[in-house]
Amino acid sequence: MLNIIACFKWVIDHEDIKINPETHELVLDRAGYRISDYDRFAIEEAVALTEQYGGSTTAVTVGLPAAKKSLKDALARGPEKAIFINDPAFHNLEPSQTAAILAQSISNQEYDLIICGEGSGDLYAQQVGPRLAEHLNIPCASFVRKITIEGRELIAERRVDEGIEVISMPLPALVTVLPEINSPRVPGLKDTLSAAKKPVVEITASDLGQTFASCLETVEIKATTMERNCEKFGAEKDELKRFIDVLCRAGVVD
Amino acid sequence: MDFKLTEEQELIRANMREFCQKYVDPIAVEIDENSRYPAEIIAKLAEMDWMGMPYPQEYGGAGLDYLTYTMVIEELSRSCAATGFTLSCHIGLASGPIYNFGTEEQKQKYLTPLCKGEHIGAFALTEPGAGTDVGAGSTTAVLDGNEYILNGTKTFTSNGPVADTFVVFAVTDKTQRANKAMSAFIVSKDAPGFKVGEHFYKMGIRASQTSEIILKDCRIPKENLLGKEGQGFKIAMQTLDNGRIGVAAQAVGIAQAALDESIKYSKERIQFGKPISKNQALQWMMADMATDISAAQFLTYNAAYLKDQGAPYTKEAAMAKVFAAEMASRHASKAVQIHGGYGYIKGFKVERLMRDAKITEIYEGTSEAQRMVIAGNILR
Image (cartoon, rainbow over the protein chains, first blue to last red):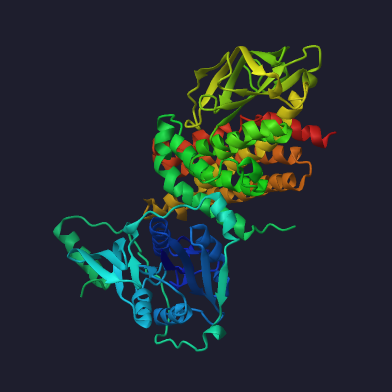
């Protein structure tokens, strides 16, 4: 029997992000939100493991109260219950804060395994998983593409630069998973309709009894854009000279 | 008046989008090309409880309101209009009359497997000589002891080649006027004398299967009469009323896909040193598309909303259908125009959308029939 916690983040739907062409600022006023794509693999893996080995999955998220909308979506994907850690103060949390808040909130929960996505769909800092494991003082394996459970051991295949690394670690443990680990199921209609009946535990900042200072300051976020000038060049000597001039004027080469 | 969708409606729509991306988009081109019935998608729809959406859970449905059902059909049709129609035909045209007019026994026996997706449903009304003029049908049903004997040929029966359960209309009393002469029957594909005739290969919605149905001394149990004798015309008209909301939703989905493709292509396609989306001529086409899609969507949702409220919706369903169908055809053609030569090539989605859009102006009542219904309502 496995008690698994699957962490997920409610992020801006990247397809809805518009860019102001003059200022390069992100225009988000009409953007919708969705469960971070990477975290869908975490939820799916948790649910699939509990189906295989028995047990139950708890979906956990940290965010603003507006992230409440994410709960039915997450619960429709198979977890038995959810923990919703929310506060109006949880605005633009950076990874160290999110990890600390998660650690504080789930430290009194019983769990055998915590699964996170490899990174979030918005900032993709890839820090929350390893930081959370550190707070909880449990072993952590990141970038995992396959999980097998043998008794109280977890065997993880990790994708590393040189190939695949296979490691084992004792439970309780934390893993961050890669998209290749599974193919998340699409919730059926009845899964969605019954999600509203599943239990949700709410935790707010005051329940946690401490504040979580940030160690980073976001100065601004700007979009990168690719602008085409559609200037055409020939292969003749004069044209090549003109080509180099244009590159120099554009500041691409000195 | 509140146009805001509930959290649940938004989530269900998003789930159907996800379903389409995973299961429908990857094969939509191939099933169109080969005019192939997407059995694997239908099996998935059944597995995920979409086949009986608006019917009560006691019959294996999901108990959804009609408005949400409409959104689901729209979203599915945005990926594949043929699959969207296969489902809306199954739910609206075939399961609808059994739910609305069937006895408890009929619902248990026929509606439940339809809702669970164990059976596929079809609606056999049109005949070679009776299209918009429904009353000109010549298929007959004669009571013989404990059985009805059906004789005649139905044509353009959607889902005909793949369905298990058919709602068939036949004349039971020639002496009556057209609107009292017909009755409706539930016919199983296994009934003796029942045969699927010629398959039709269509211009659009090619993955939706269409055929003739041949009834030759086809014997069915007496208790398979749906409603009462003489109620057939009424059952047909009422079924088409709610079926039309499904077709309107299908048209909105097609038009939305045409706009999606046009936006994407026009931003990527560079001509004269800039994306063609910078040209006002194309901007106006897409502005008109977006406006008409919104208008059609509101008309469609309004008809579904009225149905959910138990209010009359015949006129509104006809308005939604005629407006949505004609705008889908118009704008699918514009989307091909925006794509230029590429839009005319097989494999580009807009080419399929243009072919798929046309049928929405024709089936479940032509645009002309919708205007007859609307005029009949406003001039009464």
